[in-house]
Image 1: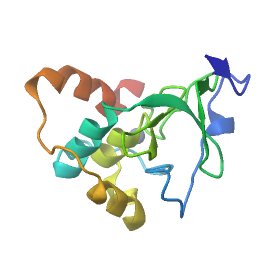
Image 2 (image 1 turned 180 degrees about the horizontal axis):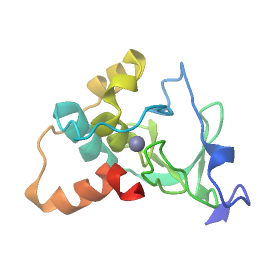
Image 3 (image 1 turned 90 degrees about the vertical axis):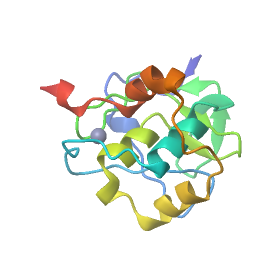
Length: 147
Ligand SMILES: [Zn+2]
């Protein structure tokens, strides 16, 4: 993998992208995670779409995607949950980052309506396969681990 930044911390590449239908949930929650995750149709559908991503890479400030490019260092959510160092393309061509499922589960109240609408429009199963439970729990993140 190539690396875009030579930084050890995430601060340089945390990013908010608004008004771009190519990307979903490029947000930065400011408040701590809810005590319990909200696991509903939207959270599970996002997971089912995410697990079938077709490629990883890096999304630039304007939402353009560069395949096979990652950032050195990790991105952390405000709650302490760790992201991966790259972004992902879904089957439908839209880009997400590792925290997309986490944001829906733990930071729903801070997600703009525009972004929720994009998730509603995704095509995907709203049922969590038993065989996916382990993967789902990893992707969901664990805010309490920061303590
Ligand atoms: Zn979080």
